[in-house]
Length: 401
Image (cartoon, rainbow, N blue to C red):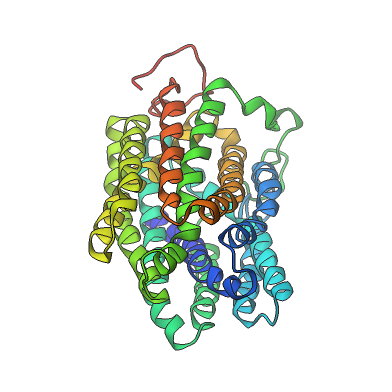
């Protein structure tokens, strides 16, 4: 378990960087674009790199052999580059340089995101992965809290300070991962080298269970990503909140996500990942559906706190769920598929929801997000696997889902 907590620093750095990016970059884009749809699109254009790179990087890391192991070479390249470009974002001088730094940062993060997450199942037995995922997501949630709460304070002092802090944390996390997390697949002997016949093909992983689960993941990320990317603008333009108050409100979501991260992993291991995810999707649907009826910040933050609990039920169990439906040899590949659909959602959701906001107003943000969660719930009920049993996602056994 000590190794899991140390590994959590990788997810901590990823989460804090993304949280700061989603909270403050829309404010940089706002003076140039003046449209929620265009801001939503620009917030996702960088994800096209992630869309194509992450499945390929994840698959390639399954077959990488080096003195640093299977995953660490990608961290050693991607994390320093990401730290550099995240620092440059607030120092943009035009829309062109802003978009360039955004794209370069996200390109660098695409190099190491899948390998970082794949380290967890590499060093953790299948039966303990939901608990381990709870731990690393707990660390990620702490990153979110620091981003929204501490980041707001830093942003008020100087808009570059949160991004400089994120870069420092990324480099410190790289040192911890390099120094203390064991490698897997190191060496260059014939026994450790991947064999041609053992190569995992993406198409071979797309059985019915996996496809249905990936569709459900796509739709719940559409709801979540749209809200995460556009919430600060919703708070500013629809509720009249100050920019720092809007970003601080997201602290309640992250705080309760953190508090429930480890318990939701235990619940997923005890009762089955599918049952806990179903609870989370249904609960988050109700939370998002209620937000348009809230006009003051106090009740809004209560709903965001409940949303954090339900998102923990979803997010803590979903990655171990997708891994559990395949073989051990396909961990990196399935990690890439998981981030493929989340990147597709990140590309699709903010511009789509932004366009709807331009037509119908900011209240429509949570209406569309809740509808997306309802669709995810439908596809999840069609999955005949509860995530308790590792396998190939076979349809021959109908588990307790």
